[in-house]
Image (cartoon, one colour):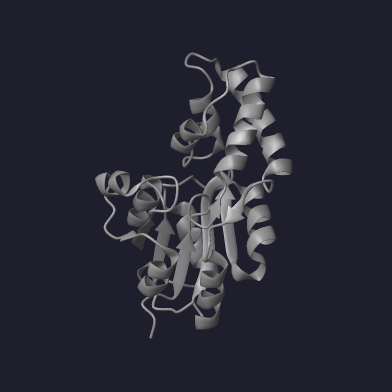
Length: 219
């Protein structure tokens, strides 16, 4: 009846608008370490490959490894206690997840955000709507390596050819390809349509209602 048995979602820029909190914690860490602040548009460009890369891109060129590591540690500590200040689900997302659950389509979240933040945000914003949430950790390679997506499918008991990956970035396109999954690229997140097309997107989705149609559900 439905085209997929599982929907695997990216988190930042796909389910949750986390940009303001990420920028606030980035600038808090930069200020604490004596570095210049970054604009919201700069932080938008920096996200997508995990917080270590976010901070590495945010610190000034030529910053040493030890100072970059210190800035990252300040960021992590600040973000864990401030990641809910301005973050919210995109409009219609909770209704979409509810509809997926009613249809019996399993839901997972796979993100390059560090694992404690992924699990905390999914618990607080989605509750039982998300069956599996996997973030960055020492035990699994980050996206675009397929490891985390395949681990999610294994936990859900769904084969890759019966699942779809939904995200807002080039990393998500590459992850889906590496995992052997279909990919739907949403355009309401941190990358625009032209960027996604330039990076291999095959199907752009401009709204949550259109995403629901692609998944064969009504919400």
